[in-house]
Length: 201
Image (cartoon, rainbow, N blue to C red; front, side, top):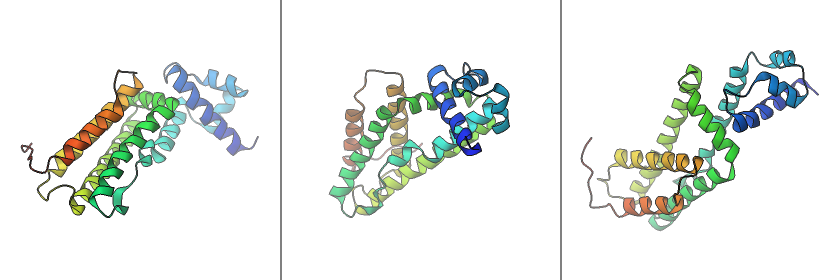
């Protein structure tokens, strides 16, 4: 195998190993055994287990499941915007179910952010990007007239962000939740909020 092929094999195998066993229980020895390499050979490609884990996290957040959201800038009227906003959440929820190993790996990332500063910063930047994206989506609705000019964009963005993160966690831990119904209710409430003003934080 070429160096690039071996490196990719190490990353892919570690991804599944962490999803299966968790970061703490996944070892370089187990990784080497699954690939059929000597343990010392792993260190030719990566400095440590943490180095492999960080590389995988960077790849996941670089090609994040969040990118599956439909960007709403192309919607030109209120009706199509409202339909696209509802569908965007449904697609994201579907992605949670379609990639269980990714969900488990993300859970391990969350656990390790308190111990790996570089990982914590990666997650912080990714979450800020996701929040900004949601804000852009809602701002597009304001521009189209789906919401009034007095719509509380900041508070509504916080609401959508919190709901989506909560849905993600509920699915990860198999909690009894109908996520698409929750999403539909939240969007319906936002769209019906034209006369409602949130108190200032």
